Each structure stands twice: as structure tokens, then as C-alpha cells.
Length: 164
Image 1 (cartoon, helix red, strand yellow):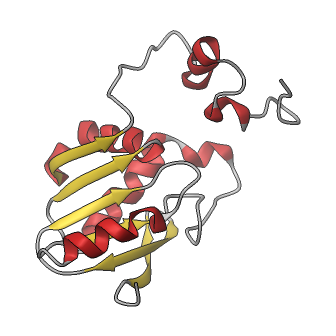
Image 2: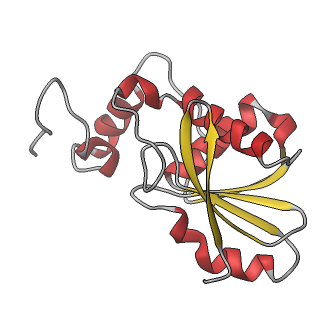
């Protein structure tokens, strides 16, 4: 893994930690919760040896990427904006996009908001589903999967984390 390079890219008002290796067509890997770029290390090494440029950031609020203090700074628009800025800062026109878990959800939105930046998408573990505008995203999961579902477990409501 000593071949993987690390740098900080300023994008969308934050400093983003990015791991990368290789040259050629770009593959952008998006990690899940509570993971980091490190989740993709094996795929990055394998695909870079096949002639791809592999890029794996720590998403906003994770690892060595800035974590703005306001919860309002973590909308999908912010996170997609971070990634569009990253793609542009790296001088890449389009990426093959690979997402897992939370990263897959972000990948779906990146494809919807900026299809011009995406050559192809591979998502692991999360299918696309339409957002119901009549219910809060997390509350929808809570209603179906309960308080112990990982996205629900870490939410706060004006105070401590809910105990189940």
C-alpha cells in the first residue's frame, strides 16, 4: 500500500483527504458508514495494476476530511458538491463511480445531479429507491427497520442519542 498516494484537495469550502494510485481512466470510490478510503485499498491496488486511476476520498465528516460543525452542512447537495469539486480539481472529465452503503446513496445522487461527470456506476449493497417527500429519510428507515438500524441509532433529537 506504500504505492497509494495521499493528498488534501480543497473543494466546496472544505479540505478533503484523497487517496489515489495509477493512471488512465478514473475510478472514484465512495465509502460507506463508518468506513474511510481504506475500505477500497485492495480494489485500488488491483485496478490500478490494470491501467486505471483509482481515487478514494474520505467523505465530508470522515477521517482526515474536514468535519464542519453544523449538521446543516451535511446535505446531499454539500456532499455531491464536494465530489464534483474533487473531480474538477483532479482535472478529470468523467469517472467510473463505485459506491458502497452510504457511498452508494451519494453515488445515486451524484449520477442524478451531474450525469455529465459519470461514465458508469457500480453500487454495492444499496439499490436506488425514490425518496418519499412526505416522510423524513431517517424516519422512513426507523418506521420500517426500528431504532437499532444503524442510520437511526446515531441520530439525535435535541439531545442524547435515543436509547432502545
